[in-house]
Image 1: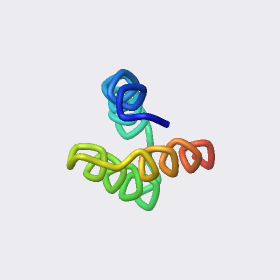
Image 2: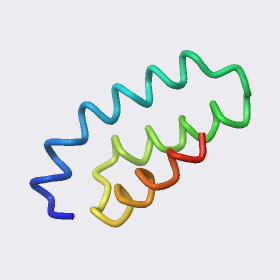
Image 3: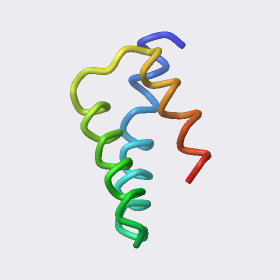
Length: 59
């Protein structure tokens, strides 16, 4: 994934994570979502972004 593609996907993906966090009652899942949000807000690499995208499917 290129930085340009990641840039265009980042904001909608963060919004999806915020919404998922608001709907989740399992504290372990909320903690994981918070970790992903923190990573994405701190200038992630494309590899980190792709890893989070693939792991979100586990929710």
